[in-house]
Length: 321
Length: 247
Image (cartoon, rainbow over all chains, first blue to last red):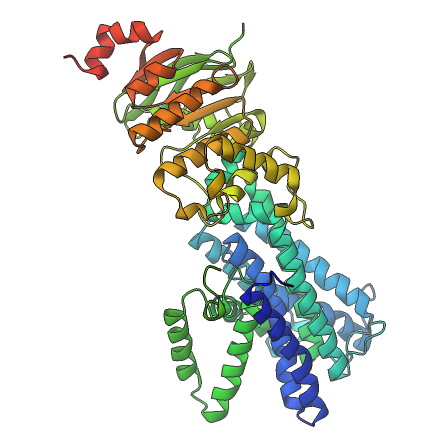
């Protein structure tokens, strides 16, 4: 513990606050804050997954919301068919099936779109990932079976062993533990040999290729891992909101996710969560004052990005870190 | 003895400019082969085609007799070709040691290893440190690469080339921007390497070239106008005319 950095302590403190405060509010009758915290934590997982690409890989993916949507529909579609019949192959309330579907479909989507997107770089990568995200958006918009644009209500949540997702406390617990695991996972990956290659390629791809690394496949692997994590966040989000619609995959959602990462501080462990917290809290507070909350919200975000380069985590960093 | 590297009829044009014009070249195992020539002669272009960064328009490149003309750069690196860059090319956001460790790691099996912290793997770190010590950068190991001076960056490039354990080192102006003292150190260092590695050296510093090279090729407008022993190059009229200047 002695060689913990200042940011390390802040990260622990932040995670401790997330562990204690929301349950405390719920037990004291403020269910609203618990709701807020659950959304924050779930989007935090998505932001952490994006940070692996954006922060450590230098890959600015603008289509990450597609994975959230895929994960959510992996809950919604089987649950819908279990209630209303049809599509017997996947019709089920079984949470493990939903999980496997969410992560599996996300992995497949990441593999295919990543294999193509990663042939480009910079702005082109950004545009092509956005295009793939929009393709997913329009696909689900066109699926009339699942109400297209109007969205789908999940009548029965995923049934998991040990955890009852109908209980706000247990859903939050699962989300919180998942977030902690996601953070640890990304930290472990980043510090591993694989992570060194990924970060090296972010900084100087030509050098890494010259050393003998086929960086394309390393990046593709990172893209698939990130997509799977984000799909998992979608699985949780579907179970949380119990209402899913193609809007979850819209490119503006991807933009928000990207914003959370950059706002909080990319390539830091806590940054994405700090970013998602500030984002969601600001949104909530401002919208309670005025229906024109987008304007002050936008201005504040612009100010933050302009004056706090490197994200909010920069404010906490000690000297020489 | 069969040469380590053979280049036959290599051609490369950019628009109307012939950067590489029917280049034939061979490198014997263990030799230091220098390529000299005026600015814009196509020296870096030639190295890029050997390392795989650029595709030639025509011609073949053979490594130990095997055709590697169309092989991507990362595969050539695996076969033992490394290059340094004329314009320093390092991972600036990482520490000096990390930079060299990445070169060691590249030869230590695949890197699809996700769990163990890379910085705790002793045999990689030790070997990287060893190579840093060789170029005199041991003390700067933990500094960020971007914090080092230009001269130190050049030393890092050499440490990385060494750490990659490549049989063939393509060095693109390693002395560029170095002071006389630093240059002399580097020359001594490369002399020690002589015989252990095969080196293709591009250099403008003629003292360094004549001190190190076993053979010298002169490249002018993409063509090799002479390949010979250093003394003969010094006395070659065409070369004097084209490059060394007549006094």
